[in-house]
Length: 453
Image (cartoon, rainbow, N blue to C red; front, side):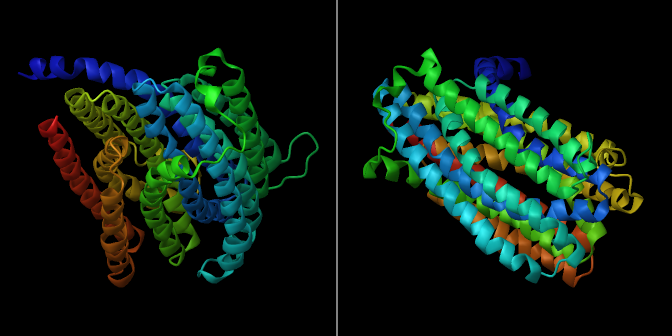
């Protein structure tokens, strides 16, 4: 029976994984930049500066996902038009997406530079942590503009099924980020040690280079000549821009509700102490790696769903989506076991501070449990995005994280005195809620497509 089940979905597993693996690597690039920053600072600059990285990453990730969400609006549209052989339309969509993403990058930079930097002194954090956080946040704020341009071309190429180039660029970008980060933070080759400011500079340099290389690839590769016939720099069309925003804006909010919940958890943890905040950063960084892998699988599910929708092939659409659920469940079970079994070892990647390691070890056990829910909810969002269903999932994510997750975490962690563990229990229950509700939504929408076909 199990063999027959596997054979039924085997072609979909193969197609999905072939598409997903390069996306997973490039998606990991965003997280590995911040992971590298944490590791470098944790080992070469100390616990207080690691807490500063935790604070900044918690704030900046919210800014980052707002931008990424807007850029994701392009992918299902490209996949759908490509499935319908409307190649010139893909270029016109790219023109509008590039303009929207540049504007979004500038808006987010202004928000960071003239908003977040002004309020960071007034959110109950340690003054020492805030002093180190400000210059790091400023450099990350500038980096959002080249990152948004990179994302435009990344989502365009991935929507067409070309996923490897962004992967290679992300890998080399991370190598450069690590090398330059170590040199600047530690102070090598005659350079004065910069501490956390150094990883901010290395991240900015990494994203400028990635933007330049990805842009050059799209405009010079033979793969895209047909699709770029409709492309014009600065071309704006209200109808096409609204199409992108109708998907991208709700997706942006979906990611924002989830990431802001984790950012809120980091700020709540910061009111307890710098050691707890550093431990939260260690555990959340490791959990973010598996999340971004899940996000890569979800992006592949979006593309395959969009392709099948463009071909009106609803049976394959549903089977392919279910195959993505199967893959993510197996993967998350494995990572959950890894987190639980290696909970005492993994924190040493970031720090040798025994107080931080002790708390982070407990958080990794909790993270092991929420792995399953985190993976399935992001795949659910990806499949629904592929069929253009983004509004109800946005409401679901808001309820799960801000009506249930954060209030419950505050009640358990702060009011009942369970500390950072209690905050994480609340997050886990929020993820469970999102996972279940999104799966029910997926079932209802895909079965309806089959019935109406």
